[in-house]
Length: 383
Ligand SMILES: [Zn+2]
Image (cartoon, rainbow, N blue to C red; front, top):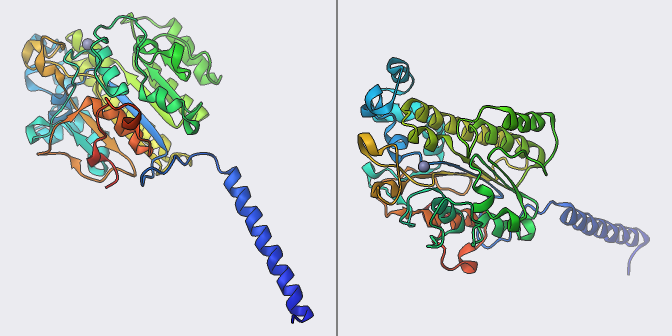
């Protein structure tokens, strides 16, 4: 039998338990749907994926190439200035001068694949070694023989970006920004349904901020060095502003200058473009680490669509006729990637593995839906 005091205590306890249950239910309902389905142990809730077109593994891992730091082979006008910027006595110092963020942060806290000098090889499998097939292989997870030109043909395949955007947790939270005006076709914008801004097109369906209005104006007004793509600063700053305002969970950024300047046989601008790409990645990384949604919950992927040839002539070009241009590089940094730094003496990794690896960071199983996609790179994922 209860005393009156015990009775009141019991009532209070019941009330307290009920309040706690209601409170827990409210927290559950109000929590934004950041948490992806827990198909595996992972902390990544957002992905930033940057690709810079046709940047060779040779410069990424060895830094500036002495044989191209001249007028004759590299079209360099001011050799002393370029040497001052990027020439150092050792390979480690040269690559750190060229891509300081990659070597001081990503390689120290994440993983970098593709240094053939150390027994790590990364390559495309499409056999064509040029851009549309490379981006398609990367983003769809397989090489498709139908994707065999850089023509403006809508991709018949679904990219991992579109695949994610169709899932509940990512709906309206995927966005892609690209220098190259082919991206609405590579990503099949007409079908994909997520934000895609490419080439000289204004970001028309996104947020309106003074900065985005100015960037849209600069795309329309500026002189055009290349018909198909503006300088990288325009897609980069557009992506950065979109990131701050719209906070997408998946942000894709494609930069094009590293390919353009190489085709133009301008080694100085090619190196400057690589240096800027590294700085852009650093800015994105530092920005997300200062934002609550992203801090410690974001994985960065950094790669290229194809390599380029070796030697004094072939460095400018790539494609089927330059077999060595199949070699690429890739880097991963984030809370789920074990710290293994620059990889050495490991089995080769392939471009077709990136899509499933990206999905796996988020706890999503891409390969079960797309069995022909390359398997995730398990070394880069939680062990
Ligand atoms: Zn090219």
